[in-house]
Length: 173
Length: 280
Image 1 (cartoon, rainbow over the protein chains, first blue to last red):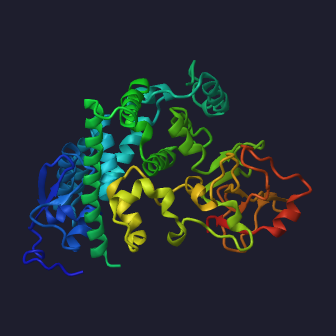
Image 2: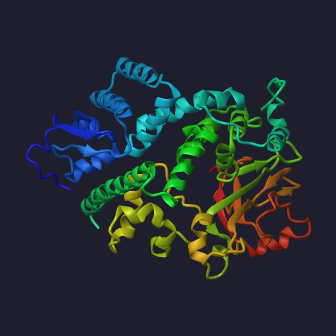
C-alpha cells in the first residue's frame, strides 16, 4: 500500500506515538517499523501529527520500548562482530528491570509486535523462574499461593519424581 | 476488506471504548456520591472489596499466550528432560500457572519402562469439541459460526455492530485488549452459545481429547514401532502420532487408562491419525 504523505518515503521521518496516559514520544520511522502494529499503521497512512495512540501501553514502558527500537533500528543490518556484541550487551542491560517493568514490557512488546523485545522479555522471565522453588517464584513475582493445603500436598506428591535427580529440598512447595 | 478499513474500524473502536470508560467512571461517581444506591453501589463495593481479600499479582494473570511462551522457553532451556524441574516448579506456583500447563499443553505421563520407552501423551483441545471428528462434525470458532452473543461483553462496545465487524474482530481485539486471547478462545467458553447452554450444568459437548497412538514392540528390530508410512526416517522417542481418544467417557476422568490389551487393534483400524510428528 503506497504511503500518500509528502515525506512518508523519507526514512528520517519521526513517528509520533501516544501512550495510554497521554504522553507523546517520537522515534525514527525505521525504529517504529520494528513494531508490527506501528508498521501497519504507517503503511496504512495512519501516522499523523497527532501521533498513533497506543491505548494499552503506559508512558513508562513505552519510553523503554522507544529506546529499544531506536537502538536496534540504528544497528539493524550489516553488523560487525563488535557491534553485535555491543547490541547484546545493550539488551542484557536493557532487560535488567524489576518484575513490574518486566511485566509491562512483556505485555506491551507482545501487543505492539516487537519481536526481538518480546523474545528478550520472555527469556528474562524464564531466567527468573529457573532454578527456583515454587515459593521463591511466588516471592519474585508477588503471586499468592491459591492452592488449598490438600492440593499443595497432592502437587508435591505428584511431582516427587521431578526432584529425584537434583538434591531433594526439605520442603518442595 | 483492506487493512485501511480495518484500521478505521479500530480507530472508531478507540472512540467508543473511551466513551464506555467514561460511562463507567460516571457510574462509579454516582455510586460514590450516593445518588444511586443499589446495584451501582454494590458492584462498586465488590470492586473495592475483592482486591483487599486477594491481593493478586498481575503475574498470576499474565495472558495465556505469554505464559505459554515462557513455558516454551523453560522447556527449551531444560537440558535434563526427565526431571523438567523448572516446568514442574512453574506449575506449582499458583492455579493459573498450573492450569496453563496441565490443560493447555500436551502432558507427558511417565511410563513404567522409564524414559527410554514410548511416552504417553494427552492433548486436550479446548477449542474443538469431540464431535468434530465424527462424521459430519464441524469445528466451531470459524468466523461465520461464532455467535457474537458470547463475546458481546468484550466486543459490542467497541463497534456499532456493522456487518463487516466480524472479519475485523480478531484484529481490533488484539488492539484493544492484549490480555484476552481471542484466537485460542476456549471451546468451553463459547460452548454456551453454540450449544444453546444447559442450566443443569451438564456439558453436552466435551473438548476433543487426543492421545498418542501406542507404538507396538517389534520383536526383530527390538524397538517400539509406529507406522509413519515412510515419512519418518529417524528413530526417536519424540516421534508420535495423535489420535482422537476413542473413549466416549464424559470429561471428569483425568487420566484415561490405556485401552485394554485386546482392544487397540480394533480401535486403531477405525480411527484416523490426526497429527503425526517425527524426525525425518
